[in-house]
Image: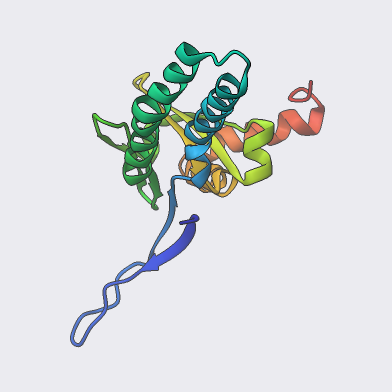
Length: 184
């Protein structure tokens, strides 16, 4: 499921329309399974090589089968568990980040508590549309969300949230860039 911008409102008969709350929601990207599938392919090739070698390398073939039968399913199960948990929701007042498997963590951060946002993509993540967000809070806590779908849009949503709360920082940054101080 890719990230999307949703709008929620409470209305109904006899209820005055409340303020619309815009929220960006991002989930795990399918590329979270790539390391597990790469390991499966590698050990399948090792098995084929050991099985077809003359004389047959039975110990190596047995090791490859053991890895394929025991380790690879654990890697796939772990990746599946991460996809079920990983997510980011950005609202007008803050954000909620969910990460961690097997120990799930749900972290709610108010907009004023967000101090810094770091966004990164490997070349493979850039190609597939995934990425990493690293959010630091005023208290020094760090929230790291790896393998996030629509990470560019998620970073933009968090930056918009930060700009709405910290307009002084945005103004100072734009003045630095205009002078050329913020450029390397």
